[in-house]
Every structure is written in structure tokens, then in C-alpha cells.
Image (cartoon, rainbow, N blue to C red; front, side, top):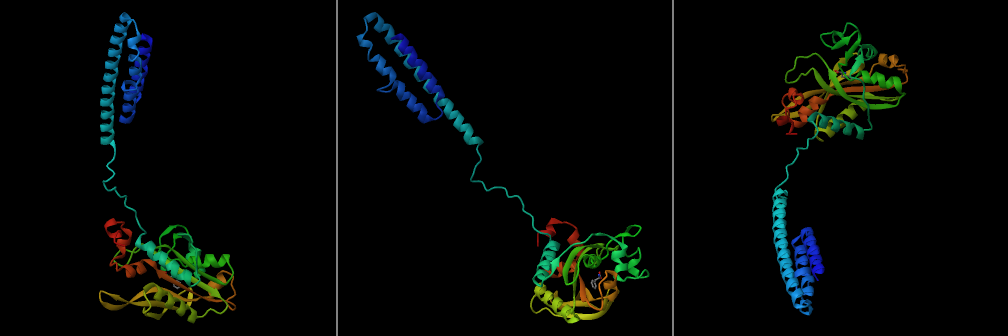
Length: 329
Ligand code: PHE
């Protein structure tokens, strides 16, 4: 009997100390102390024992009951303490989360993406070329003579010898034509560099998108149609364009194209791009037969498009990386 009682105590204490929840604890309690629990089953048999043994076993049973009750109380307190700590440590899931600011495209990139898209719809493939360029591609192949002012180091960043930071995206015209045969229809967005003093409309680093179309019957009419459509896509269906005669060594005839826009409630013409029919000398430089092929080219300032589209008053704002400015677009 004594051994059985001690075994009940051992099992009961082990189960109580292993209880992880109040429910498990309650199950342990009733398994050992309950009406049909293990201890009751044993004490029910006390009456059958001889008086001496009965008294000793009865005392032991009472001690064991007290020990089990004590273990239950201790475990209950421990469980409550653990639950309190867990509750304090757990996050309050009702507090709104902290949002990480998700950036967005820079207004210049937005303007570039839109230009790529507009020209893609007109059948132009976008390609890119090097920002560090050989003087040959930037000047000679484009029929820009040595005495031309843009050749001068005041107007171009030379890196050394005949290597320079390209002053326009037109050298990529030559690179593309060297590698392909007509028909060609590409646009070339990219960064260009000129040692200009920064002001509201000038920056030593700015962006252009070059266009080049070469084929067998490409005319100035095609040039006008493509650019007029592109401007309407960019600035709205009622956008007016103006083609003014101009000069570039690599196009003949050449034009400057203005767009009529509303600026501060006033209608104003703004020069947006240079354009023209590809000069025969440029075709000769890349080994195309100028008697067979004709083409047109244009170069547009992406920064200017961004200024117009977003109503930004100063080109320098685009390169300052001030989030208070950039977040507005
Ligand atoms: N490259 C010229 C510039 O930067 C623009 C241009 C491109 C003009 C293509 C005609 C044809 O001013």
C-alpha cells in the first residue's frame, strides 16, 4: 500500500509540473484528487487493512494529498506568471504598422519612359550608346568640322586626347548605322554633357532622346508627321508645333521644332528639339549610298520635356535629389 501511494505521488507531481495550460492542470487535478481519481481509489481500500497499517497508510495518504495540492497551487501560479510575461512581450497587433516609404520613379525617368513609349507606338526601337565617346563619333563622322565651336574645349568635356564626354546623343546615329543596314528606326535616350554654367535652363549634365529613321523613300514630310504626332501624344491632341529653318552640320535641310504651350496662363513657343534630313556626308561616313537612302534625325531634350510636363520652373531641381521636391511627382 505504501509503495502504491508513493508511486501515485511521484506520477501526480510529474504530471502537474509538466502541465502547460490551466486545462492540463485541471485534468491532472481530477486524475489524482478527483472523485474517481487515483488517490481516492487507494484510500477506498484502507478499510480492508489491519488497524496498525491502516493508520500509517491513512497518514501517508493525507500527506500525499497535501503535497499534490501544494504542487497544484505552485504550478497554477507559475502558469499565470508565464502568461502575464507573454502578454506583455507580444506585439499589440492593433497598432498601425510603420510604413517604409516606397520610392517612385524620378520625374526625369518618368519623362524618358513616356518618350520611349510614345516612340515605341510609332515603331521605334530604343537603343543606347556610350557616354564616354570618341571625338570621331561625336564630331567627325557627323560632319562637324574641326573649326566648329562645339569642337572647342570650352564647349566639350575632354577626358584626354580624343576621348570626351559626348555632347549630344547624335554619335549613336553613326554607331547604329555602322552596325546595321536600312531600314532603321531607333530612338536613343541618354545622358549628355556640356561645360555650361548651371542656371534655370542650363545644366552641365542633361538628357536627350535621339531619333533616327533611314530607308529608301524617307522624306521631310515623314519627319514632320512623326514629330507632330509625338508632340500630340506627349502634350495633348491640340498641341501645336512649329518647324523653323535651322542649321546642323549632320542634317540638311535642318529645322528647330517648337511646341506651343501654356506657361503661367500664357501661350508661349518653346524650343524642344533639333531635327533634319540626314546629311549625305554622314551616310558616306558609315558606307551607306546617299543616292539610295534618305533619312531623318532628331534630338530632343528630355529635361525640357519633364519641365513642361510637370510645370517645373528650374532644370537644376531635377538633379538636386531633394526629396521634398521629388516626392511631388
Ligand atoms: N544633336 C543636336 C543637338 O544636340 C540635335 C539634333 C539631333 C539635330 C539630330 C538634328 C538631328 O543640338
